[in-house]
Length: 349
Image (tube, rainbow, N blue to C red; front, side, top):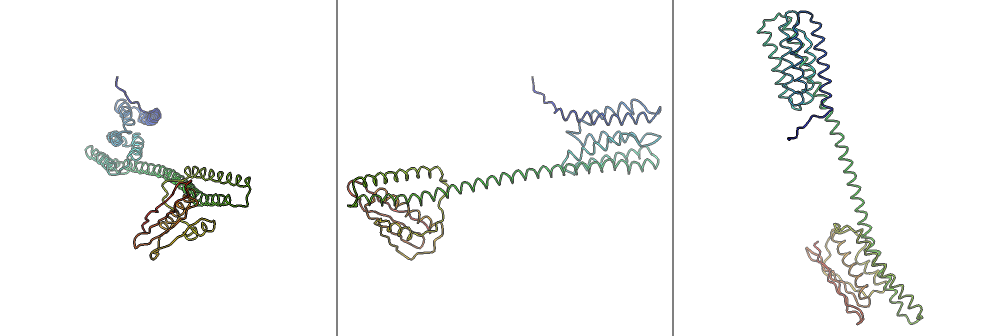
């Protein structure tokens, strides 16, 4: 059995209510006309047209206006007066035409056609001048003014709806900006923890390892220092795991306020056997390139101190016209420690 789509209950109730009001106006006009009114022509036919035109106005509002305008044109044949209750129905359907049709060209053609039909009816029936005045003033007003009111109502409704849509889009944009700021803050925290705190903890572990070799310490002190160094190493590993959760892999580099010379100087002051040198004239580097050089040297120092703390570290930074190269190499550690050597990346200027 094919599925038949039924109109919503709210639409049906609205059509019934409007049809009832217009039918009541038609019935009042029929009663006011007295004995001269024809039950078929002045009551049954208008009620049938309204029963068709009101539901039809949802899909074809122009056709509904034409049907009711035909009732008004038939009223011009009344020998007593051209006025009839169908003008109210014509105004109501003209309002629905402006409300339900966004374009203006086709409804204007419908209204012009309806006006032409009324004038042609007057010409064919050779009605008196008062009928012509009625046809050229009252009926055009019932066509145009409600249509303009319907268009105004529609425009106001669309303006309010677009305003709410804009407000929702702005709210979503604010949420996205706040989320982006939160992710950026997490990336900043990850970078600071990994590059600063991790580096400092590695230097502390190195100093603790150096103190183990002091001849003035007792065996108990050396044991405590070994446990301290192991605890620091565990803290560094836990820090790396935490940073892996916080860090945004889309971040490619963050600006630094420190210089490579400051970083190497602090490492040397902590007892790290490091030497560095620059080759070539240092060009004007962007903040992204400077940050990349700093991070490369810092990461290499941290790994060298962790894996080969007793080996000498040599840092070489070479500048060319279109690139900057960083090389970090450390000497072989003692036999009981694994070797570590790193060659830095080439960073475009």
